[in-house]
Length: 296
Image (cartoon, rainbow, N blue to C red; front, side):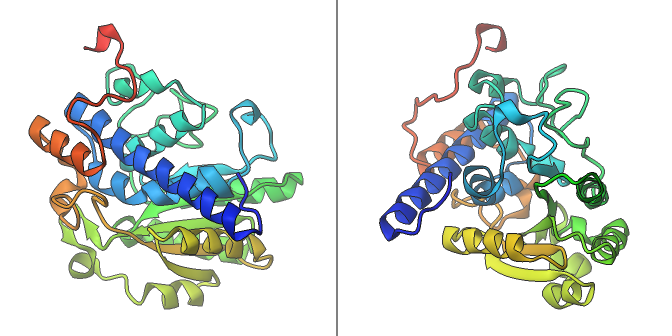
């Protein structure tokens, strides 16, 4: 989907992105509550970014998985993968009913993305934090060396930015001037142990990343106008890698989850899940993606 120049068309497409993000949040709650485990907080917070990535910015299609010129995404903070699996289903990469298998033994939709389960979708298995940007560097450099077009996107969490390997990778990106690389920092200022600023402060993050040779774009990660403009600005940069610091809210869309580090990895009870879905516009008995009989 591309935004046309007319205000009417841009407004329409933004609404489509908002609708997609809302569905990602609904799917996230249903997947995690159905299985009884998962990481809802960050997944709810990244929904708007993922909707804009797959619904607007990325050059991709389910029938182009073997195309070396397509865009690629490395989800480094893999624990938020419920949101990613949702957008993949909405974009036609996996069946909607498969979402009910999230975190089940032998499922393709593991609790952290596993390359051996989804080899054409998962660029690298993730779980141990801090490694994704190094892989993204390799993918971006390989594209340039092989003469392939397309961008590489990498999503990391703010707590993950405390890892030393991330900063070595940041230097590598700028050293090789990987202008076909866009890093997205999901910055909600919360991690499993509390506030990022109190555990290991990252600020002033924009200034630090700029000093490392990155084009820095600092945005409200829930404002679609800012998100779309940020992706366009990143694509327009031809001399250095771009990083989008997306200021997000953990548990976005569900008041009792918002800005509470408890929900980094806590599963809502059936009653909490019902309430959460009501906040997201679901009727109490609403069921969107089907659940196969063997999963009931």
